[in-house]
Image (cartoon, rainbow, N blue to C red; front, side, top):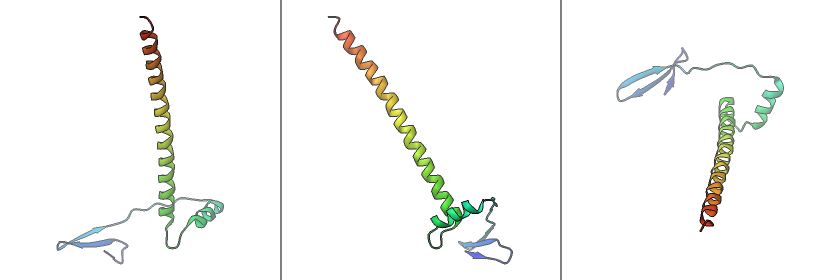
Length: 92
């Protein structure tokens, strides 16, 4: 992969050149937020990599919450079925 003068990336694969540009965006941060990101930064890590890791952590945390909630709901359903089963078994 090479970067040409126009900022486009070039890749040579199986005798074919592929040219593409990396799309980026700019976001505004308060200096305090940038400083916090700088403190999280490790060596050559980019801000994009730091933010991507943070997003992944939040997604994982939310998934864990959803799973716990689903298991609790399932446990309540199972408890209700067990109580109904016990009540039906006592009729004899």
